[in-house]
Length: 472
Figure 1 (cartoon, rainbow, N blue to C red):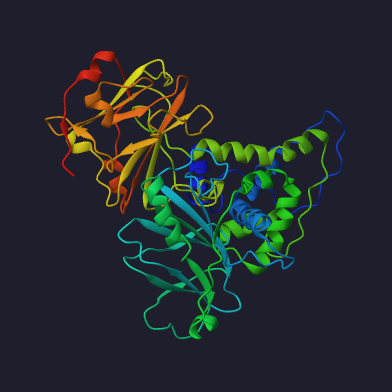
Figure 2 (cartoon, rainbow, N blue to C red):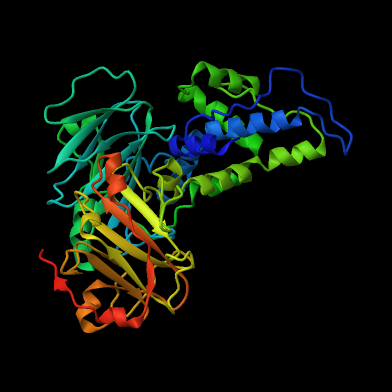
């Protein structure tokens, strides 16, 4: 499979478009003697690799539901976790889950619902001007709609083919599958603001339409939990190739794929499709080993392709299902640009025994409709405690701008001169990485305008530069 094909797979999480020859319908080969390898073994491996990638989003979503249900199930009722919001934050009192690179700017929310029996009303309170975004994701991992609007709002989520009247004042969202994952984020400015945000989160709700029409909105059952949700791809990695394809065949009976004719033909050739009975072909030990390695191989490919190669050391993180599910909603979405770097302008690793400057020209300062920030993480992708408890810096801080309107962010372990401490992002003594996020992006051109210059290694003398306090 060529690199371009892999990038398409990860970016869209749809079917694989490999041009390699695929396995055709034929009798299963007999067990081959050890040490032999049939010429078409490579075709078999490629065909089943492609099948695994094609159904990956569907099975990954199922693993997400199981992981979420395992944490949230509060009773013997197996559906007790449905329509139940869970929120995570890095601030105390809003317990963080153990996820890599936590976002200090956002509280993340997750809820799973099913609209097969009747529509559900998604209600969000007035956010008082703060940024928020709720992504609605279907069984195949497609973000099919978003819920975000000024003021309080209610959204009616309906199943495929639903016929009915949308209540006045509600926005209608037609889901392409009965299962819907609501993955959201809500702006939080600091530890004090987290208290206000918590009160808003407690008013997020999912209510059956019949109950809503009787004036009975869902009770306050959202919660902030310390329980760690197991990463869905880890659950999937514990399954064999055969298990995954068998599970996918069963899931597709309720959620049929929207494959084109070519994909249907390729999947049918290896007995993958709604209600089909998949079984591994009889094969020699060498082929068995290659087939058993496919899940780990695909996971590695996903990890490699999830980030675009960028410029000046920064790479753009793609808004994929894998990114979203890794922290149950904390990944980059279509409304956010997310970039990361772990090296300086010379290509060397960022480390705290050096001082760094990020110089952003006036016309390159991010201009998102919401806000932007740069967060620092240690070598294990965790937040690093420091004397001023500053983990991120951005346009909501009292930054000092240069006389020409440009901006310098100082990234170093020791404190700079007093005049520059507004622009200081404390670094640990060891290795670290930086993540840049810009919220409120509505077009691809905004991604280009978020271009970041290289992180420069500088001398201590830079810290004494003068600046002009930003007008806010």
